[in-house]
Structures are given as C-alpha cells and as structure tokens.
Image 1 (cartoon, rainbow, N blue to C red):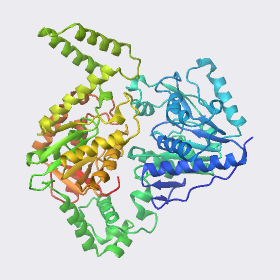
Image 2: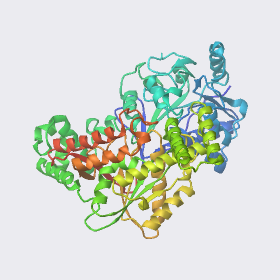
Image 3: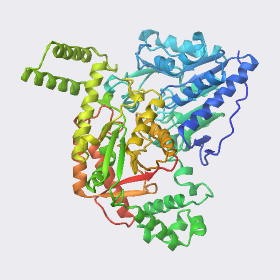
Image 4: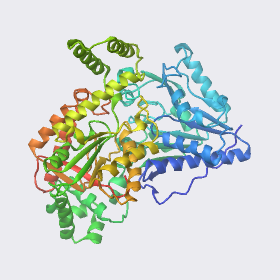
Length: 633
C-alpha cells in the first residue's frame, strides 16, 4: 500500500497570489500557462519523491480544456527532464454513457491522445470508467472502481476542473456529499457546454459514469482548476458561497488539503479581485482607482461628477480619498480619462495601414464591425486576416444546400461531368453515413470552409473592405477536422510573421477575449503574440488593440479606447453580420447565449453606450470598446 507523503508546493511566483476572503484557499495566476506549469510541478515533485521512496503515486485525473496545459507540461517534463511515470497509477473521474472507448468524444480516447500515449504509465495502471458496458453491469462496475481505488491505497492527488453548474466530475447539482462512483443524468447546462465536442447538443449523451463527491473528498490532496471568464460566476459560488449540493465544488471547502487555482479571468468575480477594498487595505493604482469610482457610480446610481464625499465614505472607499484625493481631483481625473478615451478617428486623420485579425470568419464584423466600417469610411488601408476556416461550425444541411446549388448550376449550363457527379454522390454519402459527432470527410470540410470563406468575402465587402485586401491564413493548428485543436507551432507563427512583414501595419486589431468557449480565440491570440516579438526585433512595432468577441464586452474601467457608432453604422454592421448566412439564425456552436450574433453584438454596444451615458459622458447610440496590448493578455 502506498504511504502518505508530504506534497511539496512550488513557491508562488510574483505573478501569482493567494486571494483573501475565500472559504477555500484560492491561488490566482496571471495566465493559464503559468497555472499549468505550477500544477505540473506539484505533480512532478510528488512523483519524483514517491519514485525515490519506491512507492507508487496515485493520481485522480480530469479531462477537458482546463487540464490540457497541465498534461502538455507533464509530457514535456517526461520527455526533456526524465520524469518517470512507470510507478504512477491513475483513476479518471468520469466517462459519458453510453460511449465507445474509441469514439473521438470518449474520455478514454481523449486521455490517450493528450497524455497517456506520450508518457510511460503502464497500461495496467490506467483506470477509466467504461462507457460501453451493458446497463445492467454498471452498478457492479462502479463498485469495482471504488475497490480499485482503495486497493491502490487511495488517491494521493486529485485534479479537478469545475463545470458551469458547479459540478466536479459529473456530480451535478443535487449530488450528495457522500455519493460514490455511479451512473448519473447530465444537467442540461452541462450537455449544452459539451455540445461543441459532439457537433450539436442533440448528440451529447444523457448520462455519464462519475466518481462521487465522497470518492473525490477521500483524496489526500485536491487541486481544482478554473480558466476563463465564463467560469467566474461559479468560482465565486464555490469558494465564497455556502456549502451546498447545488454547487458540488463547494464541498471542497470541507477538505483539509484542497486548493483552488484560477487565472485572472476566472477570479474576476471574487471579492478580492472585483472589489478588493471590501477585504482590506489595497495599493491604489490608477487602474484600481478607475475601477472603484465606476463601481461606486453603479452602486449609487449617480453620474461620475455628482459623487459625494459621503458616497465614498459609506462604500468602504475612505482610503481612496485619503491616498488619491481630494474628491474633486479623483472625479475629474476619471472623467477626463473616460472622455479622452472616446475616439471617433481610431487611426487618426492620415491614411494608415490597418490589419484586423479575425479568429473565425465572422469575428471581425461581430466584434468590431462598427470600427471596421469607420476605419474604411475614413480612407484607411484596411486589411482583414481570417486566421481559421471555421469549417467545423457549418451545419450539414447548409453544406448539402451548397452542394445542390453547384450541382444544379453545372447541369444548367451543361458543365456537369462524370467527375462532378461522382464527387457530389460521394459527399452526400459522406454526410449521410457520418455518425453523430464524427468529423467530416476531407471533401466536406473543404466545402464547409468555402462556405465560410465566401460569406466572409461578402461581409467584408459590406463593411467596405474589398476582396484583394482579405487574407485567408488557414493556420495549421486548426486543421484537425475536430473541435479539439493542435497546439500552436512555429508554422502558425511564421505565417503571421510573414504577413506582418508584407503589410507593415500601423495598427493591429486582435481578439483579446478570454470567454471564447472553443478556445480558438485564445490560440489565435497566442500565435499573434508569439509573432510580434519576431517582427519587432526587425523594427516593426505596430499599435496592438484588443477587442472582445461575441460573448462579452470589456468593462468600462478596462476600456482604453471607445469608438462611438451612429445608428447608420450599427445598421451596416448588422447587414455585414447577416452575410454570414450559415451562422445567422442558429450557429452550430453558439456558446451559452442563444441569441443571434447580431442581437448580441447590438445589445452589447448599446449597453456600453448606456453605461457611458449613466456616468455623465456624452450620449451615443452605441460604442465598441478596445484595450491596448502592452505585453500581457
């Protein structure tokens, strides 16, 4: 039986901090990459210590986008620094049911592709719930899984992610603290969140086998991870709320050796980050001052220049007055900064070369279509670089419609031939025989990519950017045919660097949002940011501005440039979004927001304008917000 050994923890770096006012120790990192390295080094220390003592290391492992960075760093440690996994025993948290282990959506297949196939864990030491056993054997299997954990000496370190329902494993709201490994029914929100991996919510299984809350809490140590703004609300409930079955992650508050590790985006709604003046003394920076004063306006429902001394005193901001006052100076300083950020000529008066990066073929017009139109109207030389094809986000029925159109066009003009008819039959067969959630054939992927490309061309033209100024990069990392993408490599970075050398832009616009449910925005941003130092070393130093995607706008205290939009520009932006016909009425991967993209975009920009108006600033119809990149995303 494995002995219990102390878990050595790497010293927190200057880019990490433990947060105050949490019921569960919470460590925040400046980036997801730093978080992944930290967790991987904890595992590295535990494995090496146990290897030295000649005892096995028993790990509980999760799947999904959150831990993938940890697995990649562990693979690197194994490959480059001789981390030996030969004495490691693993137990995975869960698996969909029913689910063939060879299916691309199987957690069995996922773990092998992303971790097990790259390290030397013996096959007999790998334990993953089976999703392909007869239903009548599930209870026996679950009991055996519990006994296998016990026989291994118990889990020494359990890694967890957290679902937006607050679940750990697949322990959905209502799961008992004492629950064990069992078959569960998935929450509708969980199935919606998984829909992208299955190419549609209707293809997501209704059930799953999961380790229970009680099983998880018996682990000697637990690390739970969360990344991205979309996890911020449930992180707050898990670490600051009451212990409740409605948020099963909250049970970790009762564990003696559990730690929550988060990036800054996932920590965004915790009191220590959102309103740190409520939890103790703070170091009042200009940015924090701006956040606090705008927050105070919202709390008091007053415009900025009407805030009183009493407002500050009654809302825990007396230290701000003392350190940054007098009050007249604070009010005027924030008002002037917000007013100065309003910019109706975002690239200036003289003609400039502008490059807009669009992760998917519609992000340009959805996210900053009004600014794009404004830049083109003002005579700037505007280019758009579409980083990926977006081909996985096209419905089969749209592909079939376009296939029919081409076939009928060829026949109408007598241009059809045996080869064209054969190709049509093949693609129809490929789509018809495709299993739910399976990737498309290469031919169908090409058609779907062409659909997205032609829609982008039409939308850009509507925004005033002609075809010759469009660049379709088709970055290699995206070309897997699956929702899960390959890592960013030198090939992706080189494509971007070469285009920057060609165009020599004065300004760059890129997606800076951290709430993209697919992760493609993050990866596209990573490729750009890795290319920038290369071209900067060659003397090219463009301004870099970040925009948000379809899911969320920057908060007013974050916005550094606010571009006002007239009703006419907003209408033209909407028409450009409409050109993306395959995404308009119902997108294949809409995220948690069921509204059409144009509705989200219009509501978001009008809301930003309303916030500025409420602060006492000039009233505009709509506003798009941007943040300047200065070395950290």
